[in-house]
Length: 501
Image 1 (cartoon, one colour):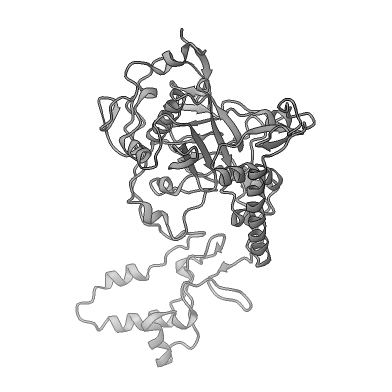
Image 2: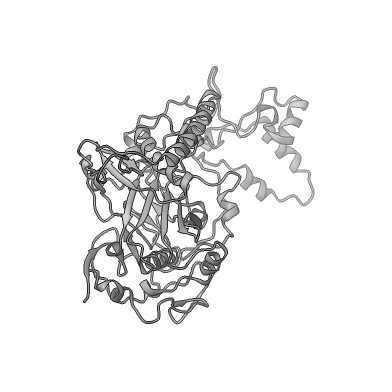
């Protein structure tokens, strides 16, 4: 029996969960070796965490001791919107919160190579009237409200999810955060209007941090509830409704105590950071999303947008590093939304104007300090009495937003320095006067000139790509990842879940 589902990239695709070569690529050998080292089984459960500010996706996997351990961290190629939850259809926001991914949400025929649906909106989102659909984690490094990876990355992540389903996991948990919920980040964003929501989902973050177990998620009274259990005297498990009053429940004492201790430590660290004046994060008006620094370094005019690079690491330092997958030629780095920037109030700055002759009380833009202007000939002229006042170049390029006013060359009298220079060079044997003429010719001032940037390598690749992508860690042969044999030899993804559907 073939199970048919409607899934999507970030738009709409009609697909069937059938045998698909991309969706059945084996787990790469390096990941298999990492599982052996961390005492994990290939088909043990997984858990995924996403962080916008760090532009990272973490895949955690259950070890044989029953706890989850970090298997691999993937840099996110592109995510959309701002820090904060998705609220309505079309707001370009990538969702934040806790979501559940089951086999029916896996899309082997996505227009974006491979993908899985985040499950937004969940019951909490719906209780608040939030709208939106088809919010994905997918390939192609292109996002309009999603979390976009490279095709090679999503092939690996997809294979890990597939194997966890084959091992019996009914759904894996996706936790999406604005940033790692540390005291430093909470202090930096303390004035953000989303802070109440972030403190609520930090409860789930803390539950996972102290237990290394997937937290049980429920909703009531339009809020999240984590690891709720029935009271000792109750005869049945509590029933939760996101819009209704919370039922009687308890949190297991060992978990509650561990979470409380962590939160007390976090709050103490937060208070110290605020007391010593930790700066509030700068608001980036209108910038659409972010990109991990490793990808921004590979793209002409690349920018991390709302994501942050590691301290001490520049895009230039990463330019020669290997990219974790194919970056398509159509990738769009984060840029300010020009409409939002235009509507924002202009910053008040003192104007600086370059003029041909300084007047009393007027500031003049110069390229060098006054005592150094004019060079050798100007200084020599002053010593010989040909000029007594400091001269300022009238064609100095003003800084951004400056207005340049340049008089025509024919109306500008020669300076004492230039007259001296002409007189001296006439007596220098073999001197090329044509070079002096070209050097002394007036040059127009350019307003808002930007300093030249070193050229960056154009690593954009052709949009046409093969049906199968190699592993992030190596090349592939005959449509399969390097050095690996198929994990499932007799049953396809479809046949193993067909009976269930």
